[in-house]
Length: 411
Image (cartoon, rainbow, N blue to C red):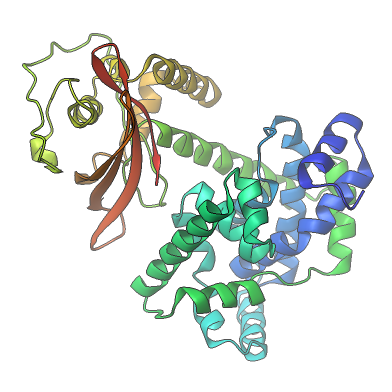
């Protein structure tokens, strides 16, 4: 059983209820989950409870995880969100226990860099996009080779190497803004050597038993924690899913679509096409620019988004993307028990309202009817004192005589 990869083990558990397969997954990932929890709480008992909750959540949600899920990254993110839920819920142990434990860790740790970045690591990981986070977890938490990282991400070795390098640079910049000056090489070494430590043997055994029972035997506090974590995971999924439509900047580092429902489409003004040399678009310049070229079509989509003209915004997308986004938001509205309009209003509290403008960095021609725009959005994030930049790729496709947005996502 041990030689099977995560996908095969998960399938064994889902299809056959194999306790052996689930136990193998716990053994493989428990140290990582426990270490994430320990960094957040500084308390071994609390970390053990969080770890237990994470694997109960895995057991509950296992049937709904897609075939292409990168389980290592999924478990890391679930551990982080569960730890955040734990702390917010006020279930922490006495503060003196946390401080005493953290002091012990610092005394035993010989890495000055690790001592500086450890309290910031998971916040930094929350700032990067999902693919970058998967790359970091696989490479430095799990110790995978670049080739293995590429295989998991569906990329070749060169692409995986670039992905890891970019992710490390983002982490380095995050730490630098908080007064920790280091290099990507030193940061990579510190994370590799210290980010995962062994969980107590008893934790893995109890986790498997309780998770296999879907949490039936868990304590009341653990069940409350699981319920809260599932809620925050659902909200995070809602925000992350919005990335695919429009790129904007928010405090959590997640890219979120900002749209408002409107039943009647606004009449379109006369198009103001973008000049071929124009690259910088402050918010004051956003307008309807038509669909005659990729840049004009992208600006038009952003303008409709910003104005809250949802139907016309959908019309600025390719037919396939139009349908995907419409169905996606209908699903979100149903799960949240809210109307489409309410979901759009929730999304609009963060996003393009925070953007001050965007710049088209360059245009990559893939084919006569396909172009990728590299776009940099800028804005001031909630809780930040300085302007922040988020770079995305916008895939533009020519449909008939008009260019439309096919996707927008993190670069």
